[in-house]
Length: 256
Image (cartoon, rainbow, N blue to C red; front, side, top):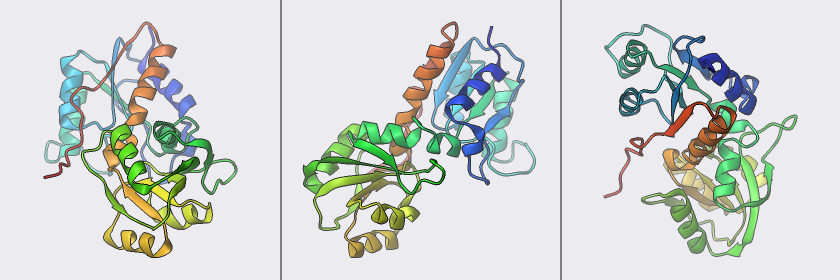
């Protein structure tokens, strides 16, 4: 029977640890590396409801994109990070995450996002030694309204925030999660449209002034598409293990 460490080693063939940002926590966040794994739950985040779902389905391992432990310190029940960590440990559930390494990896968060939006001829934006975070690709020329409808439908968003740069959509950049700081690179790559999340007020104005269509599709919705892909790859590599995608995880942000 495959162990937690076997799953970790496989995940890191998909998203090599050396691709992570310096500040990031990736890998085995808690649990016994040599513990056999019979059932895995895969989700975007290890929030409380996901941890409880892992227990309810009898999972030995929780695999997520975002980390369980973000900051150094003590593991106690005095904060959410500590409570969730203690819950998993007390229930014998290990936790693995692949974050910025999965963002940058081939076939990772941003390649999946580009594919979901139907981009063609996908390339890395501003690659360094063949590695980079954001992706860009082409689409048949269309109005911004038409593309906004596609983004909302394909990502399952309740709503979108956007700035109209005054251009039709032809070349689109994507950056799952918080990538709006990369606008200069996106423009340098010749893109007219950028789909990302967590965009600030002034960044919308900057985009409008620069003639860039800027779309905030939400952190959850721009990254969540990778969850099903990650689950499929783990299941294919370990057919003896039951791999389930979280049914409780969702975006807590709503539109009134």
